Structure formats: structure tokens, C-alpha cells
Image (cartoon, rainbow, N blue to C red):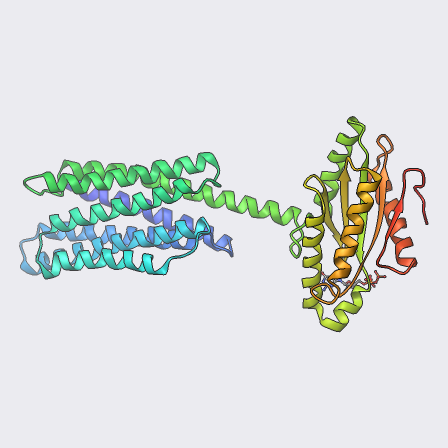
Length: 393
Ligand SMILES: Nc1nc2c(ncn2[C@@H]2O[C@H](COP(=O)(O)OP(=O)(O)OP(=O)(O)O)[C@@H](O)[C@H]2O)c(=O)[nH]1
């Protein structure tokens, strides 16, 4: 029996380490991705299992008070462990960004607690029955989490496999434990089956913790990548990412002898927009403009917020007419929205560059001169520097 207590304390230790790891992951992340719920889950399981174990230890005492206390601790720890799975489930849903269903999750928690209370308290059922019911409920929870991960195809393949193995395994393990207790004529829930379940649970918990920590790590990397390459206001590429992407795009165009169009787009009198409508409305207009440009460009084109109210677009393999039409369309669409979400117009300087003469900084400088002409000519227009005239101003 002694090894049994030891096993339980190993479980307690594993879950405490897991709780600390998730707590640290949560503190590192202001937006939590479910890690706070996972930390609560692991902490409750560690505490619940510790309480259950103390209950077991007191059970061998002959003193009736110790026996009664043992029963109560056992019951308390078991219900705590059942409830912990609600937090695990909530963490998974948050991580996957799925809508919360408070009705269903509240019902699940209620179910775990109610089964525990009624089984033990009202009907005076023996602990073996409570162990059986809780095992089946935990098995069902794990099946639910297994199915949730199975449906989420956007996860990295190897991480998804870890989560599927973990929760599929847990579902089988706990389900099998419930059935084993049910089928055992002596209803011995401390027998060999239970030892196997605990051993396996320790292994699976470690795998589970690794999987969840890897998942959090993946999300953090994703966020860092986004922060490093995107403009936070418009979600478009930032200047640095644009310069990186453009270099390889231009090298590709040179190799395949393709023209590349470039356009600088600058919102007109944007200072006035801020002064008249406020900075927030100005921000909103920049966002709206970014969306509108994205919609007008082709899939293969690249657009970035170059700075302030200035944007730059790169259009590989485009003809002079196409470049002109796309830019005219953007100008027209902005002008049509002038009284609504975009209380301004846009001036555009574009330039179509032939292969072999492609140098990004020169292209930007030429488009910038074209933009200057558009501003000087009264704004709300597209000025084009063509192949033969790289210096229109
Ligand atoms: N709301 C908001 N305003 C910004 C942002 N970045 C730059 N601006 C504003 O954009 C304005 C740019 O003003 P200017 O460079 O004088 O140009 P303009 O008023 O657009 O005039 P023209 O370009 O000559 O038509 C400044 O008032 C900046 O404060 C931003 O992120 N949000």
C-alpha cells in the first residue's frame, strides 16, 4: 500500500510543476491563450490528489473520527479533481479561440459536482461507485477535448498529434478504469487497475504538459512574427518587412524578365482630418484606407504602410494600363467615400520599371517624385512616371 501513497504524491508533484509552468507562461503573456485556465486546472488536480491521498492514509486508522475525516477528504479531493477538468476544457476552448458556451460549461461543472454529491451524500453510495462515476466523467471530458482538437485543423501537425494522443489516451484510460471498477465483483478501486491508471496518468500528464507548453510557445512565436512584420494599426506589412519581401520579389522579376510596378499612396491633407475629426477618426480612416487598397490590389501584389499616412504598393508582372487602372480605381473609391469613413482623398505616384533596371530605392524615389507631381497638380490624382521617364518632376 505504501507505494500507492508514493505514486499519488508523484502525481501531485507532476501537476504542481505543470501548474507553475502554466502560471509562468500566463505571466509572460498578457493575452493568455488559455494558459491561466490550464494553470488553475493543474493546481486543482495537484491539490485534489494531495487531499485524496491524505484521505487514503487516514483510512487505515481505527479511530472513528479519523475514518470520518478520511471519507470527507476523499470526497472533497475527488470532486475537486472532477471540477479541474472544467478549467482544462475552458483553457482548450480559449486557446483555440472558439466561442465560449457558458451554458454548456456551467452544466458540465454542475454535473461533476452533482454526481459527486448525490452519489456519496444522498444515496450513501460506496466510494467505489463514486470512483467509477468520476472516472467515466473524466473519460467523457477527455473525449470532448480529443474531439475539439480533432476538429481544429489550423494547429501545427505535430502539436495536434501530441494533443490527440494525450487526450485520446486519457479518455481510454479513465473510461477503462470506470468500466473495470464496474465489472470487478469486489469493486476494489485501489487494486492493480488503479495502479496502472496512475502510472499511465503520470506519463500522459507529462506529455500533456509538454504539448500544452509547446502550443503556447507556438502562439507566442506567431505573435512575435506578426509584431515584427505588421503595422499594428492597419495590419499591413511594416516598412522593414516590405523592404525584405520586395528585395526577393524584385530578384525574382529580374530573373524572369518581368516588369514591376510601384506606387506611393499618400492621403491628402491628413493633418486636417485629425484636426477636424480627432486622432481616433484619423486612425480609423487609415485602417479603412488600408482595407480598401488591399481589396483593389491583386493577390500577388504587396502593400505596406510606409509611414504615417503614406503607403507603398509593389505590383509584379503588371502592364502600364493595368497599373494605371488599379491606381485610378483606388483613387476613385477613396474619393467616393470622402463623406463617410474616409473624409479625405488620395494622391498616387506610380512607376512601372522594366526588368534589369530594377533597384528598389531608385524605384521608390521615382514614384515619390511622381507623387510630388500629383500633389502639386492639385491632389486627388494619379501621376505616372513611365518606363522612359524615370524623373517626372
Ligand atoms: N490619426 C493618425 N494620424 C497620423 C498617423 N500618422 C501620421 N499621422 C498624421 O498625418 C499627418 C500628416 O501631415 P502632413 O505630412 O503635413 O501631410 P498632409 O496634411 O496629409 O498634407 P499633404 O500630404 O500635403 O496632402 C500629421 O498630422 C500626422 O500627425 C497615425 O497613425 N494616426
